Image (cartoon, rainbow, N blue to C red; front, side):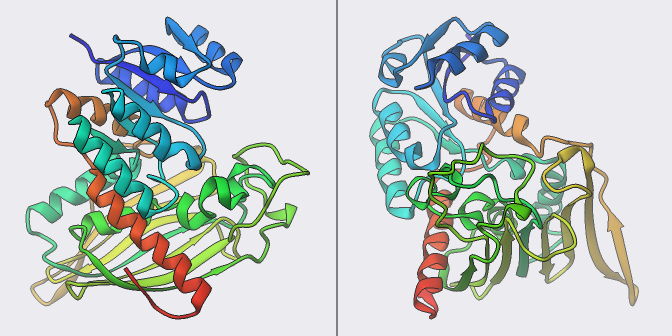
Length: 359
């Protein structure tokens, strides 16, 4: 019997969730949004039978086995906990929550419910990432001593005064919004436990309309803009491994770059997406490479992977269904999400204090 899914939130990511669930053979039977008209529109376009303006009513539907959560960051933890307590599996958009303390509460709710709790770390599902993980698991890379994670944009502020730029609703700016490469680098490294972080944030350009991106939500003249435009720093792990990061919505760079580069004891490597036009996936150029020494010569291998304009979003949602049904291993878990959020918390702490922060 197909897994039956309810969706909370009719926002911009909903089409990827829908496509992923359908690809995995699940049936989307319900959608809820406080803006019920928006939910009705998605339902009409996708033949979804049940539409709700109240999440509690949807969660009371016994036909719903699992939910996906596509709402502003502030509501990730409370809605995930509410859904888990209602006996539903949960697939939540990134970031996992506003902070690590909220993820601890989510894990407790997961354990109490005995259900799956996963997050949309969709870049793990990209063909390039899957191909690179095959090399890593096969032992071709060895221990990854160091890595560099980057998601930088020249013009990528997702609107002014909306929830993205309001810290109380988002938890922060690009550091928490574009956490994907930080996660992917740690995934390649075996998700080591961090010991301390040195980081700083910069708010240059965060109110400059010249740096607005091609995606996001409409500006709100009466809204709040109190988050960073860029974050840079370094993470030291208990294992001795080290990771640097550069993450920005608005920064004086040539163009948008999304990449993880690493240096292993047997090989180095790179997974990279370069954008010709910021934020427009169709303009992207993907690269996946492995660097080795053979016979005293430097040899660079290009790893072929199928094109994936959606950056793994569809397959990430599909993996959630497969994980529920036991036909595939989950691509992520809440314990990793907790470690990631601890690092993000420490970046903001270090930026405020000007000193390294313990994790």
